[in-house]
Image 1 (cartoon, each protein chain N blue to C red):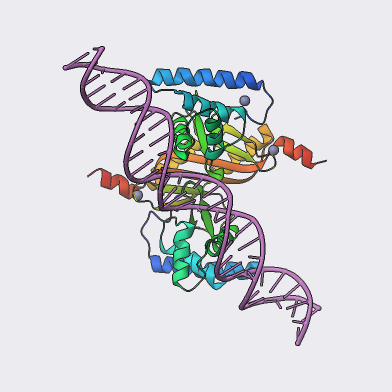
Image 2: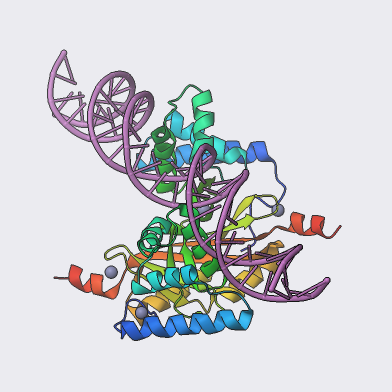
Length: 161
Length: 161
DNA sequence: ATATAAATGTAATGTTATAACATATCAATA
DNA sequence: TATTGATATGTTATAACATTACATTTATAT
Ligand SMILES: [Zn+2]
Ligand SMILES: [Zn+2]
Ligand SMILES: [Zn+2]
Ligand SMILES: [Zn+2]
C-alpha cells in the first residue's frame, strides 16, 4: 500500500506528461475519444495534487476558450471518472486525477485537513471484506468509495514545531 | 458483519421508539441537550431506512411548527452526526439514522441503487488496514467514510423475475 | 434576579449539479 | 461524396445543497 502519490516528492512535469500520454493510449485502446476538453480537464487536475471542484475546472477550461457553462465541466469530469482517469471525492464534492489509472482498483482517498492535499492509496484489504459481506447479507457491491480525512506527514511535522 | 439493519424485516415502530429512547439516554449521559427539534429530526430519519436530504427533513420539521429555513435542519442534523446518532451519506448529500449508535464504529454505508434504501454495516476489517497505512505513509487518519453502491437482495430477486 | 451561554429563528447569499434543448463534429455507408 | 445516425459540445434555466451573518429566545449558573 505504500505508493501514495501526492504526499511524496516527484518530478511533477514528468508525472503530468506521462499521465496524459497513458490516458491517451488507454482511450485509444478502448475506442473512446480523448477530446481536447477532456484532455485539458485531466491536465488541470494533474497540475495539482489536490481535488478541484467542477467550477474550478470550468474556470480553467473557459480561459482556454472552451464553453463556460457548468455542463462543460461536469461532462468532461464525468468522462474522466467513467474511464477511471479521475476520481470523485465525495467528501469535498471535488475531483482528483487518478494516481494509478492503469490498475483496476478501489481507490482509498486520503484528504489532509492541514494542507488540503489529496492522495490516493490502493486498498488491498477491502475487497475480501466486501465480498464476505455480500455472501452474508445478499447485498451486491457495484462500487465502493473509501475516503479518509486526517493529517499528512508534512503537516504532522509542522505541527510539532 | 451480518447485522445490516435496513435490508431485513423488523418491527419498525419498535425499532424507532427504542432508538429514540436510547438517543435520549445517551444525550443525558453526555450532558448534551436532546431538544425537541433534534429529537424530531432523528425521528424523521428513523421513520425511513433511507437517506433523507436536509431539505426533506426541513420540510417535515416545518410541518411540525419548527423553523422553515435551512439552518434549522442543518443544525439539527449536524448535532445528530456529531453525537453519532446519524451519519452523513456523502454520495447522496443526505443523512441516515445510525443503526448502532451505542457502538463506537466506522460505518460502512450500503446504498441500493434499485430501491434507494440505505443500510449500515459495521466494518470490522478496515481499521487494521488503515493503521497499517499510517505506519507506511505517515498519514494519520482521523475519520474514514466507506460507502458502497450496489443492489440489495430484494432488488436482486426482483430483477431475476 | 442577572449574567452567560446555548439553541432557535430569519434573511440573504453562495455553491454544486442537472434538465432540456440547440448546434457542431465525427464515422459509417449508400 | 452526400446522407445519416451517433457522439460531443454548447447554451439557458433551474434545481438541490449549504453557509454566513445577525436577531431573538430559552436554558443554566452564579
Ligand atoms: Zn504528480
Ligand atoms: Zn498536509
Ligand atoms: Zn452507525
Ligand atoms: Zn434494493
